[in-house]
Length: 387
Image 1 (cartoon, rainbow, N blue to C red):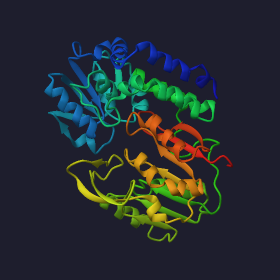
Image 2 (image 1 turned 180 degrees about the vertical axis):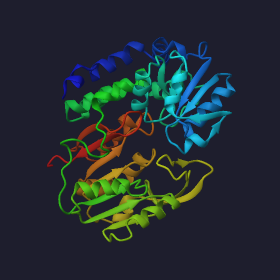
Image 3 (image 1 turned 30 degrees about the horizontal axis):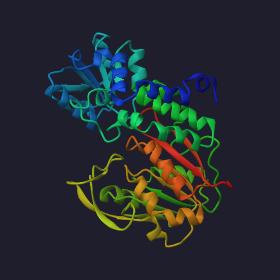
Image 4 (image 1 turned 45 degrees about the vertical axis):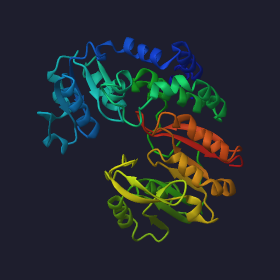
């Protein structure tokens, strides 16, 4: 581990902080003490960075609660044509006209880099939208990623102690310390020492053969497949790619129309064959929902493979990971494939995903890696003991 990681608060330090707080209310009080300008009685004005879905939602909530919007910024040129709640979206650099004490919220799940940039611009009160959602969930209803985040930490402290014993290396404990630190403090700089920016490319962890059978759960338009093919130098046996969104699936098909080893399937991975409802946003944030959206087929991986070999399974399927692992139980027990499973779509997935994997195969070695600067892309890796 590098010096920055070694000098950061440890996994044990984070658990002690949770224990000292005693409850979610205690953790919330600690957040309020750290970020007083963002508390309900003091938050009177706000600038927003990020004009996608969460930024639009935050702007509407500010108007609803009488919080003056001082600006909305996004460096995506397409967003700059928009007006949100009467505010024209500008480039981030134009926020320089504001007083540096103006509270600024980054409305993006990738918050580290914009937070760092805004602080370098001189803004002293900069935080991700996660802060408002955990500090004041009644006024700022939490996104799925943040819903019950502090309650999970406080109520499942023993589960987290067990998690520290489950992982196979000290670096995984350092990653967990940083991830929990971000959840406790709402400061993405806590993640900075452990971020490995190449998604599903953890340093010195995964080894590949020349005949991999790769299952991509949540293949989107094939971006993670392209990364896989690059890493194996185009030497592999087969890719089985699951994508439930019809429009995105068509892009996936088109992108690999000339590659006979890639087999796209227009379905989501789940526990077993069924029909569920899906929010077809056409983005990586498309999720299963209880109402609205469209109906989509889902399948269990065991039903698709029917005993056939698999060597590597990746799942990024918007909170369906645990159900899909259960639907792949026979394949995992028989073939012991490498696993790369997202562990952030719900707060308790940070411990429930590795616990589910360990229940399926107690001999797996478990690791954590962080692949982005925010709540997203926390991945549990599981490797068979003989790898």
